[in-house]
Amino acid sequence: MKSYLKNLLVFTLCFALFSCTSEQIQIEAQNDTINIEGTKTIEAEILNLINEHRNNLNLPLLGELEIIKSQTQAHTKYMIEKGELSHDFFYERKQYLVSKTDASDVSENVAYGYTSARTVVNAWLNSDGHKQNIEGDFTHFNVTAQQNEEGKWYYTNIFIKN
Image (cartoon, rainbow, N blue to C red; front, top):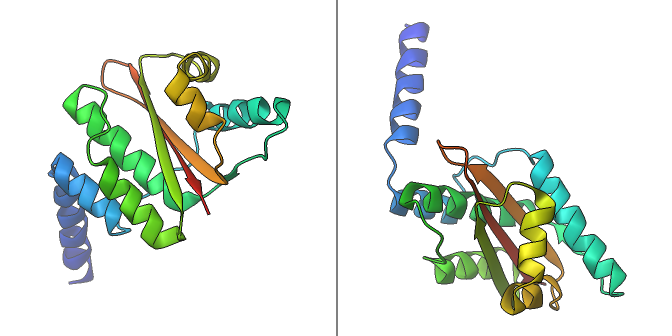
């Protein structure tokens, strides 16, 4: 009987995981049910490069918050599903982070196609709006970098101020 229940649970979880729509992924992220993946090397490099840049400007370094990762991960998966960059549902991500962290400000950078941490950070730094986020008055951040089935990278980087 135990093995039957275990198999039923595994089947139910697999069905739920692989049958989600984009909207469901966003809702799951808002409800703390998304499974946060560990930090990839490219993600750690992005965070380090951003903090190096801030340090060179004598700006305070940003700390990582896992709660932000839940939002970057869900949004990156959403963009991969759509096959395009977007800031869709940013207001919902912002409200979620404000409610969970008491953030007074939230901002977001997205990117697509860059193959290394340095190239994506350089692209953001060469764009006034993205650079403003990187150099902004924030306290914490996190990032998700994920490849689609063709191997193209998608990125979501969120900054908050506590």
